[in-house]
Length: 359
Ligand SMILES: *Cc1c(COP(=O)(O)O)cnc(C)c1O
Image (cartoon, rainbow, N blue to C red):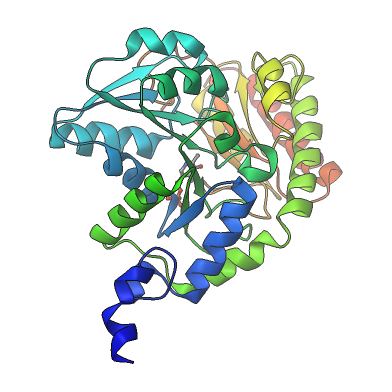
């Protein structure tokens, strides 16, 4: 008894020591996610945002430089701009299309490259392999936010990434009723570092939340299949509407990211963007107000279909922002003809407004 207590820290990274380091439930979920990601081991956090913040904080200190993809999730950019820079870390943003050109952006103090694939709101896909070939050669740590694809459709660690991040709040849980994050490490060194960092910041998810996400994993495969099929049908339908300039979905052959998506991904999930001709406020109101099946909500990845207006437009430092009206669509698990009917009505309301004289 005494010996087991005194040696408890030997089990710090893979056993029950103290609640802050995880419980049997936490470890069961971590092991399942690590297996899906083909990684060494996973650290569970209280949210996807926490997983992003802790991954960055684990490797960056005062005087360091980090390169962050220009299409990163808004909270990722805010953590970099509002927290890391305050701690004396230099941040610069880069074009997702840069590929091996990332080498020219490395500075002597560059410690980390942060990626997201595809990009938030605009869905560009970086050439992860070309980037990690550079970062590995220079001993720079690479993290990637893999929330969109999930490890079922993309395995960042197999493409040279050191930390694969998931907002398990989204597809891994799948039922819009829990918040949780996961950081999966490619090797033992990265794992101990992020595990220590989560403990130092006191970040832990409750066992009940871990249980819900673990249960969600059991249907991830069939859910994603349906999300993918619905999203493809909706994307193709949007593509036919005269008000639509462009559909931003890598699974469409017309998408600029299609080639790289085909090479690296084994599927596309339910989230995509639609760029419309610029809408007036009254046209927007007509479009969104009156939806029956689609709901307005930010946290996608659950069973239900969602639409969100993407304005103000996503923050970008390198890429131009189109003057069209961008909306983001999440194709849920409903029957696609019903979803298309709801959207068809929304476009009808929009057209009715367009034909009225400006009041
Ligand atoms: C939602 C989301 C996050 C943040 O996850 P939370 O669990 O909501 O904190 C991070 N990255 C991406 C791509 C997301 O969609």
